[in-house]
Image (tube, rainbow, N blue to C red; front, side, top):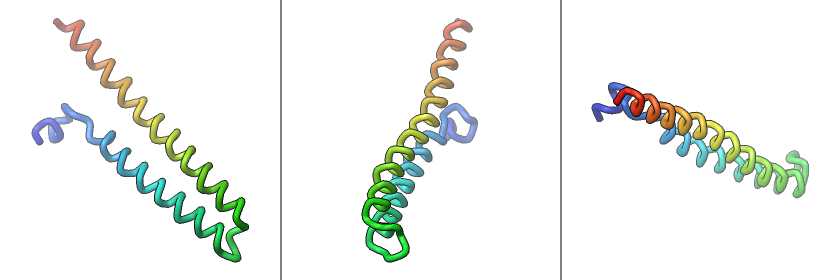
Amino acid sequence: MKSVFFFDAMLTPKIITFVYWLMLLGCVLSGLGAMFSSYGGGFFTGLGILVGGAIASRIWCELLIVLFKIHENLQKLANKSDE
């Protein structure tokens, strides 16, 4: 717990994983809603929301995680140069 309060460990990557699952759930619900409602645009629109939303959510979350991985590697390099 000390590492979280003093910013020695990153909390955001764990939150990003949770946000990814929420986004995926939102894509599924939106896609199914569009498929089976009269106002949604039809089956293929719903299918596009399902597939496109899942891919876009994954890419967005992966890009955020890459930023944190870059930070971790830069910290390792900085700690290595201090030794």
